[in-house]
Each structure stands twice: as structure tokens, then as C-alpha cells.
Length: 303
Length: 305
Image (cartoon, each protein chain N blue to C red):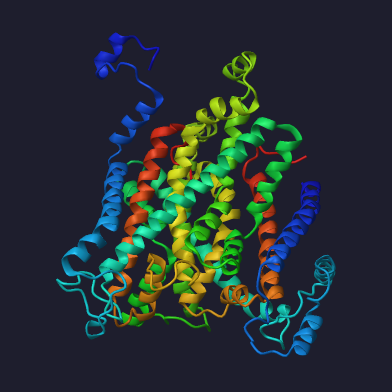
């Protein structure tokens, strides 16, 4: 784009002054209708999950654990749009609250994974040689582990707290990020700007954190956006098995598990939490796809 | 090629040793004990139990004994089911788990590759958009939502298929579809993008130029390229599929290995947890090797020396 003559640009599109790769990517993302739809749906769901329960409490005066046994297992109605569960708890509030936890765990676990993976991969790629070989061998070994089993073992062993949940998910989710970042750093460290930085006296950590990692941000963001739904899915998976968030706090996985057990009679207990979960993942996946296409056109269509 | 396989097989041994040692340490060093729940056990009985399973010996000795047992194909005794060995429990559950996984994999590969090919050949048509939209839905619909929904519709509303249990192929249809659909969707996307990548390659143009019929070009030349990313993905896919089968087996009450694992971890049934981890690790490592070999067969540019 920079090498085309201004005259040519004005013919096809308005002249853009001071365009940066990030701004280009944003423009590409904004043109992607499915991705933008995903973004708005995800934002709307997030807002609903965090504000909805407050509104419900303000208007009707109950929250996710308020029981009303006289009103147990009622189908959707005006007062309870998603119906109520066996204990007469409002399903809408419980689903929204569960969505809060899913979103929080997804974001935090993906952040943990991205941070570990980035630092690990960058060090491995920058060090090179034997250290690199060893560090990547470790990644290969962990990658070969049936790692969800490891998470299950970790969670059953160290108790079922939320921070533990997202750190153990993050602890096993960083492998791909590490591989991607290492690959990037391997090629970047041969470039002139690294040589220049070294020549003016920047030391290893400075080169790593000031010069190499910022240049790998594109793929990191791409992988991060795709990791969030994956982590949400895994949290739900653990909760479904009864290993995640504990009652009376709801989580989408646990709600779906409850619903699956009563589905023959109380269909709404399965359909609403399941639908919200699917909608959340659907929108986040579309957004992730769009971000990847926008930031990394070469990766288009992969993964 | 044979040399490559032999060398890789030898390379698996240290990897497996590390995996076994690591998981052994994690499980053994964790707080809790297999006999914790049975309160009021007299100390003599507890000592006797610990002695029986060897838990009173130093950890290093226990690890060595475990390796020794592995060499003889002996996975030890379960603490939860005192009359049964881990080998027996696994032998009981493995056929169901393997059958379920194979059905799911066939469904995933068949449907995924077919949809991917149609999508790539009809790129940017309604077919393409529709199929890829469905694929996205498949990726976003977790198996623990899809499974109960399928059971609700096909078993509890229309009574076409059994809602769970085991016995006969009819029982494996719903769990197989539930387990395989996510991978079918993913494989469809991979096949499509892999094929689109080779559409403009010289060898495809060459195939067209020499007058091969279109279906030969698509199936013999383009599909080869389309399958490469699918084959790479198969290793981790099968690994995840085995894990997800824990959930699916729970939903459909399939008598497989999966449900044992969660219980075993809860009960600190050390040898049963280890046995299942070892089994799955061996399966995974072998499958990954198989994937590498298949890769070489598909892509003539790759040479193993």
C-alpha cells in the first residue's frame, strides 16, 4: 500500500494518511459482516450477563440462589422468561450468572495461557540451540499428554476453587501459543532491527520484551481470541462433570448437566442454558475467525 | 521409511517414561489418600492396607516397582474395587470406548471431508456458505448440549433410537454422532481451506491441462492437498476425542472407561488413574507416529531418511 502512488489510491479508495498495520487490520475486521455480528452478539451477551442479574434483583427482588419451592419447575412465563428449576430458582438469572463465570474463566484462562506461552516461546526461540531444543521437547511431551486428564486430576486434587480452575486450564493451554511465538521469534531475531538494537547496547531481556515480543503481537492476539471460546468450552466441560464451579453457584456447564438429567420433563432447563452457551461460543468463534483473517491474511482459513 | 518408524518408536520410550514418572509424581504427591473416606479404620488395618499396595515404601521405590509392573504389562490393583486389577477394569471398558471412538471418527472423517470437498469445489456459492455456516455451528455446539438434544429428539420424542445403554449398533449411533460432530465440522473447514490452497498449484493445472476429467482432478489431485492439514489435525483430534468421550459416555450411560477416570481421580485410586493415563498416552503416541507416516504417504515432497 505504501509503495503505490497516491494518485492510484484516490482512484480506488479515499487516501488514508498514516495507516498502520493495526489500523488496516481493524478496517478489514470492520468489513467482515459475520465477525462484526459476532462482536455485537458477544458484547450484548456480556452486558446481559453482568447487568441482567442486577436488573432482575432490582425489579423482582431475587437472585440466583433465591428458592421458591411453591414455584418449582415452572415452564417459561412472563415472570420467569426461562422458567424455573426444581427449587423454584429463576433460570434466567442462573443462566446469566453462569455466563458471567464462563466469560470470566474464559478470559482469565486465555490470558494465563497467552502470557505463559508468549514468554516461554519467545525465550525458547531467542535462546536457540540446545536450550530451544530442550524447551520445545518439553512442549512436545506435554502436548502428547491426554491433558484434560491432567486438568481433571489437578482439579480433584487441589479442590475446586475458581482461581485454580482458570489457572489449571491456562497451565495446559499455552502450548500452541508457545510454538507460534517461538516460530515468529526464530525468524524475527535474524532481522536488521534486532541487530541494530543490539549494536546500540540493548541486552537480551530488552531485545526480547521491547523488540521481539511486540512484533509477534498479531499472531498472539489471533490465537488469544480463538483460545477464549476454547477455554469457555473446557470450563463448561469440567462443570458438566461436576468438577468446576460448585453449587449453589451456577455455571453454564453445571446447568446443562442438570437440564440433561431432567430434559424429558423440564425441557427448558436444557434448552436455555445450552442455547446461551452455543450462542456465546458461536459469536466468539465468528469473531475469532474474523480477527484472524484481518490480522493475518496468510493464515486465512487455517485452524 | 522402516528405519524412520523404528527410530521414532525407540524415541517414544523416553517420552513415555517421562510422562509416566510425571503423572505418577503429581498423583502421589497430591494431598489425600485412597483410604481417607473410610473413616474409623483402625491404624493396624490402615498399615496393612498401605503395606498391601506398597504405599508405605519410599516414593522412588514405588515408582520403580510401577515401571517394573508396566514392563510385565501389570498395571497394579485398584484400591476402590479391591477384588479387581486395573487390567481387568480397563479390559472391561476398552471395547465400548474404542467402538464409540471409531464410530465417531468415521462419522467425523466421512462427513467432514465430504462437506469440505463440496464447499471447496463450489467456493463462494450458497452451498459453500451454507455448509461452512453449519460447520461453525457444529464447532460451537458443545457435545454435552448436542448429546442431550439428540437424545431428547430421537429417543424421547420419536422413539427411533435408544437413549442410552449398550448392546448392538443401534446404541452407538447417537453417542457416535454426538462425539464426532465437532470434529466433522472442524475437518470440513480444514479440508476446504487445504483444497483451496492447492487449487492454483501447478500440478493441479497440469492435471487439468492433460485433460483429466474434473472429478479425477478433484479427488486424486486436489483432495490430496486438502487432506494434509486434516491428517496433521488427526493426532490431537483423536486425543481430544478420547477425553470428550468421558462426557459422552456419561450422557448415554455407555459402559466405557471414561466414567471410571473421574471417579478414580476423586477416590485417589492411584493405580487406576495411572493405568488410564498410561493407556491413553500410549494410544496417543502411537497415533501421532501413524499420522507422521500417513503424512509422508500423502505428500510426496516429504522424505524420511
